Length: 437
Ligand SMILES: *[C@@H]1O[C@H](CO)[C@@H](O)[C@H](O)[C@H]1NC(C)=O
Ligand SMILES: *[C@@H]1O[C@H](CO)[C@@H](O)[C@H](O)[C@H]1NC(C)=O
Image (cartoon, rainbow, N blue to C red; front, top):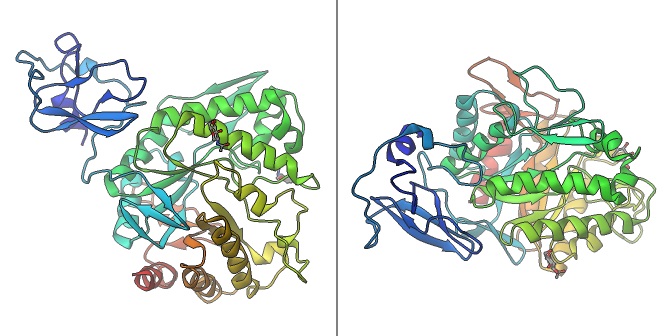
């Protein structure tokens, strides 16, 4: 709760050498206060981070004369704010082919909400997070990008704008502060976020939003242009620096569905290596995912489009890169010209590669707009869960639907959407969570 943080903060003048409530107080490279204000103690969490948490202060940490002053409250950019209802847990990790979340290693389920960081109501964000929490869905994948070429009106959220040859990151109230709130609410509800950095498609800008600023005209060249990659990495750095110490981050993700049609697969493999190494240089802890559709697997006797290498992806080569933590794949049979029954083999062929490389496989998106969500998708979920000891670690359906309290708006129905509380939800969430156990 905001008020709790506020009342325990102390004036900077009285406590220059002391960290305020929940502030950082140590870690490699840290040059700020290493002791905490009265009532707080500096708790070691890892080599990179110690934090002032409530508790008896270590000797010498007492500061007798402190005055409350609201002006010391700054935007909580790099410093995590106080969890409002639950502890924010521990960092999510890969353990062999499984995920470990808050210390528990098992199969997990989750969903996608590309739009949650674009909401302007904090209470809508909290409502959604509490629905996920009570449903047992642990992982939420969100867009950590929203790139524009024309700045919208002040009520519309965007994260980065391009003008001439300049990229400007929007850290304002209609910018990354909206994503800050998503992270904060996720911390309070024990939800773990996959935060994605750019789109292959033009929704919310995508790589195409960078094109004229960095002087290219295609995704293929964008991946290889040092100017475009410099802008993209600057954006990555801005986002990571805000949430570097949050246990609500499940994984950083390079892009939504990166493709390079007709390209040698080395183009994307090189870009994935370069980007995952860059992310690792900024953050030694959190997992890193690609966000691709999982195309490009050699399956003898099967020349279906999803297995082909035509979109420039080689699933096994990319997963083998040292700083890639997990394999991702998606499934939209009606867009890809394959049958619904293709799903089981699609899951198992990815799982086998994950098992071989000893990294978890995440079935990151799946959806259908025809035939009924429950009937069509349940067998895919079951195939994924059945492979939980054979490489599959988690699945996330596409995508979450909610009727938002403040506006009554349906967010956001694309035909694949599973609305909270619907019959589809009972089938694909409640039953699934029960089977997972
Ligand atoms: C996404 O990538 C594919 C392959 O390069 C390309 O055909 C498609 O046009 C891309 N989407 C956009 C919006 O650029
Ligand atoms: C992973 O990334 C780090 C940081 O950039 C880099 O130093 C390291 O060499 C990479 N790991 C491997 C095994 O290539």
